[in-house]
Length: 75
Image (cartoon, rainbow, N blue to C red; front, side, top):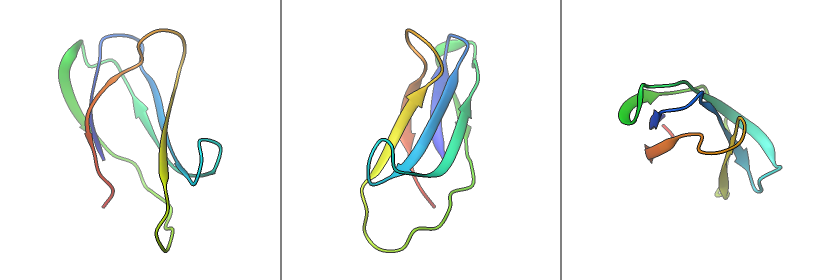
């Protein structure tokens, strides 16, 4: 789950295990919220991983600014 804002076309946030190219655990689709400070809470299903790991948030979707992220949490 994440709180995001987007004043452009948007993009996606991949949640990856262990490295920026690690196993894909989930993907959040970010759409235009109308402004860079208009926040929307979005979520995705996340595959289960046991133990303690580094998680990487990988932003993609084009050139320039993709999104603002206020907070992120895994439930």
